[in-house]
Amino acid sequence: MIRPLTQSQRTLSSVLSILSASTELSGSDLEKIAVTGISSSSNDVEPGDLFCAFAGAKVHGATFAEDAIKSGAVAVLTDDEGAKLIKGLPVLIVANPRKSAGILSSWFYGEPMRDLFSIGITGTNGKTTVSTLCHQIFQSAGQESGLIGTVETRIGSEVLTSTRTTPESAELQSLVATMRERHCRNLVMEVSSHAISLERVRGSYFAAVGFTNLSQDHLDFHGSMDEYFAAKSKLFTYEYADHAFINIDDSYGQILAANTELPVQTLSRFNEDATWHYTRIEEGIHYSDISIRGVGGVLIDSRTSLRGGFNFDNLLMAVAICVDSGIDPIDIATLIPHLVGAVGRLEPVSLGQNFTALVDYAHSPDAVARVLAAAREMTDKKVIGVLGCGGDRDSSKRSAMGQELSLRSDISIFTSDNPRSENPKTILEQMTHGLKISEPSAIVQDRAEAIKLAVNLAQPGDVVIVLGKGHERGQEIAGVVHPFDDRLVLAHAIEAKK
Image 1 (cartoon, rainbow, N blue to C red):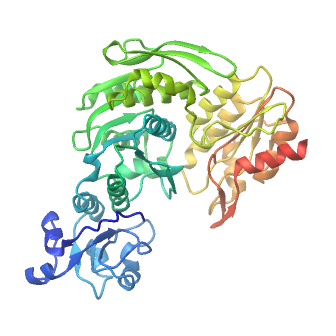
Image 2 (image 1 turned 90 degrees about the vertical axis):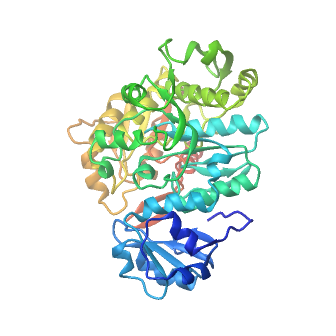
């Protein structure tokens, strides 16, 4: 957990004044206890911390209170259930510890997100790329900036490993406070639907929020598309943001733009009535020449190496947000040719082979369809797709993902992703249900062997694209994470073919 060098200190009494909490301590006892940090993980607790113990899917966080005590925690914030498990520390009891932790963490660090031009990007697909492009523009324009997302976290040019798309609230606010301390001017971060539902961004405030699109994903958590959309929509309120950027080529985006209480700048690849839209896209082999019309009639002429229609959408949103932040459109036009996509997103693996090899993180039906459509645009030869579905996740999307692979690939290779605790064969059966698979298409459970087969089948001019894991460097099987990087496995297969 990243913490600012300048340590904050609050009395437990002042902490209690922010919360609607109950405790057995008296006023004088509360004044004597100094809180110098907040943590929701017992592994991150430092001396002086308030430990926030949440109810988990399997285990209550209060189960780890003893570890927190050993590390120096001075008090615990939890619910009635958690309070029963804690001995030896003052306990603050609230009805919703996650919500309270978000509000408290923001207050504790002095609402750091309000001191930066903070941007939150949400949507099923595109969050990582939009955030990455914004960060590249900010940094290239000489503005030190922070990035928080699925692939990595950045404080200026320093790169940190991300453990989840959107950190827990205590970690998030501490991280942003560190960015403020290091004089970052901007922050751009991915905001997942899980983070919104689980109150990780409670207490946060964004100068702008962006909506990319919505398609089937995470229904194991949300239950339905309506609930999934409702979770995303919560971000588009004055509680969280000043104004919004919404892609109205997406049907859910149209609904959101019509109903949000925030001022909206709309975006579209096709609709010239949108605030931001393309007036020209001329695609070439290595670059595409583009013209973007924006707010106030601004016109940006440039060229980009980004491939695929969805990446034009991502670029459009990044440009719109960065212009809104105050960066000169003329400067942005000069920067666009140098922008590169996020790691593991249509990422090429090039070792001089006579076919194109790509890796992408697509792990929803819509993402698979979009990425394979982009691959199709790159060749008049064959598209060879390799895809698996993750275990212990939304099983209802597996058949649809398999159908997209079969429909949009000339050769479809079905394999494992991260089976986690599930039987890989069962996942593959669900993926391929109702499909007629004939050679050279195949079902190959071993992912490395599946990638090797795709490479060996490739002829000059073909596109081999490995989907699902993108930037990930491990494969989780039966609770054990084994080293596995699609990019390295793909590179080794190409080398072996040579």
